[in-house]
Image (cartoon, rainbow, N blue to C red; front, top):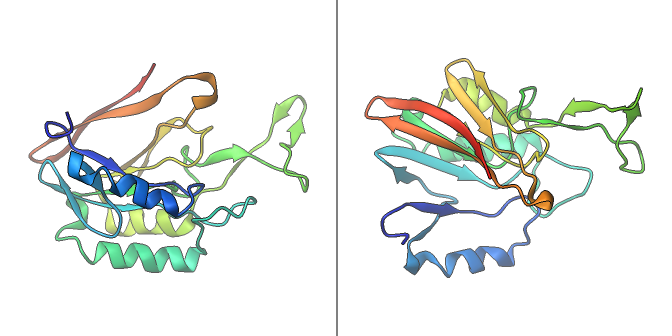
Length: 190
């Protein structure tokens, strides 16, 4: 029953734009379309963004770092107190435990050295800069399936549940808030 639990839904970078209307069809059943507005969760403001920095696959929802920064800044302007907010951005911040993905060669195959897949940071610099500048309580991220991780950017906790949907594994985080802000957070999978 979505009337007892807040359910926010948004597309990711691979999702075609017609899916926006599919998600919005469920708003009358309590699903919250969370893009381009502030959504309050337990007294804290949340802003959400589905776009990512450019990928080798040219997916539908990609923006340059410059345009990502503009979009983030326009969203942050809607917040009363960015330090007491939640950033729900599909793309993780650059150079964290959240954005490690296989290095690819020119044919888009993973580069393997000494039997090990080489990993590189592929997250967004604009998102990292925004989280360092505005210091939200937490950054909720996805996009990089290989990076099931949590990290910190100054005071901001950032998490990415990763994904192993091909193997039938669902991953996530349980996040606890108090009146003061972020409490505990736990990795979960099943």
